[in-house]
Image 1 (tube, rainbow, N blue to C red):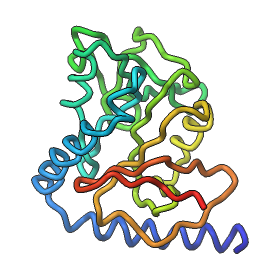
Image 2 (cartoon, rainbow, N blue to C red; image 1 turned 30 degrees about the vertical axis):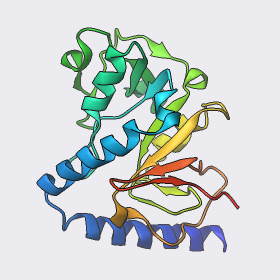
Image 3 (cartoon, one colour; image 1 turned 180 degrees about the vertical axis):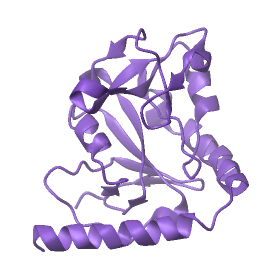
Image 4 (cartoon, helix red, strand yellow; image 1 turned 90 degrees about the horizontal axis):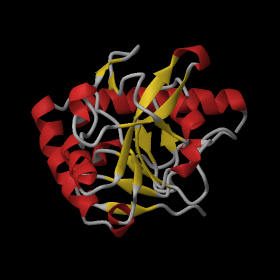
Length: 200
C-alpha cells in the first residue's frame, strides 16, 4: 500500500469511527470511564508505574482524573501534556502534589493543562503513558485526530515505557495501516478488558 492509499484508508477509518462516537451520549462515555478506570487500576503494569503521563479527556474520550489524583496521593509522579507554542509540540508537565487539578488552565486547543511554572519531566523518564485516539487495532496501531502530536511525543519516550491506548470497544477496528512515524501501543484499555497487543 503506497503512502496515498494509506492516507486515504486512515481518513476513511477516522471518519467511520467519529460517526460511531457521535451516537454516544456524554452520560454513556462517563459511565464507561468509570468501568475503564476500574480495569486500569487492576493492572500490574499501572500499579508498578511511578512516572505517569495521563491526559484530560475531551467529551468523547474516556476520563481518568480520579485515578490520576489517587496516583498522586500514593506518591507517584503524574504529568499531563502541555503545549509548547514555539515548538508546536507537547511536553509532559508535572501536576503538583497538593493543588493537583486546581492549578490547570485552558491551553491553545481548549484543553486544560498545567501552568507554565509546572516543571516538565523528560519524556524518556516516563514509564507509563495513557494514549487517547480515534481508533485502534489489536496489533497496537493507533489512529489519532490527525495532527501527529502524540506520535511526536511518544517518539521521545524510551522503549521500556508502557504505551497504553485508551478506547471504547466501538473504537476497535480490524486493522489500521502503519506509516514509519506511527508509534504502536503495548496495551489497549477498554471499559471491559485489557488487551495485550500482538505486534506480529
